[in-house]
Image 1 (cartoon, one colour):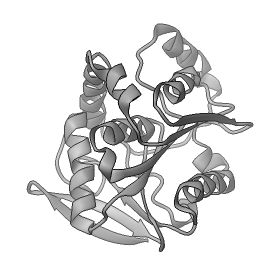
Image 2 (tube, one colour):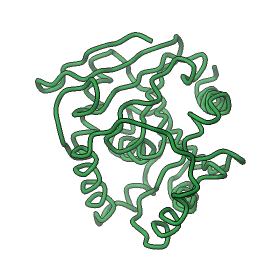
Image 3 (cartoon, one colour):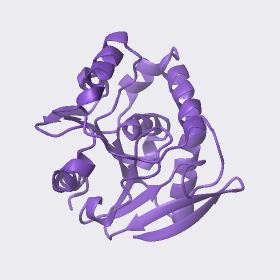
Image 4 (cartoon, one colour):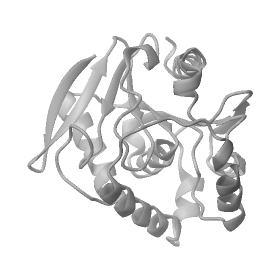
Length: 235
């Protein structure tokens, strides 16, 4: 894994890069978590993989920001490293950010691979199921920045309450493959709905793995993301 520093509006962002082949952007969850997927063993095989750490988190400068800024950072990184377009893999919050990025910059996104996302909702029953399942969820320690988490969470709510959200999603031509973790405490119905809303969406469930299966079942993670990326890029 190599480290690249990308300057965006006076802020230095850390970007990990590894591998060779068609370009893939990988987004981790949170929001506001360090890039826990920045590991060579977790990168999609046969691809050049870019892993930007969000501004205000870990090795990246800056501070709290909104989703608009987060999307702009992704576009700035893409331009700075000379990538015309890339597959975007997102886990958890990263899945939701990937969807917004694809909607707003479809020419930059070959396809979205969204894994264990929340989907564009703040549903009470979804949250109740999540809270009820917390005691039994495998504990994975991940460093995070609370201020960044709070700012992006508020911005996510504003985005999903926008009056053009569902029209924008339905009009999006970017292929999107959504994968639920079968043992995730987070209900998967929002991702199934999303797959039916976008023009070229698919939804599958990966059995017997929890939300953070990148940590608990790393071989399953790598095999899954490698296969989904290869299906798009032919690698």
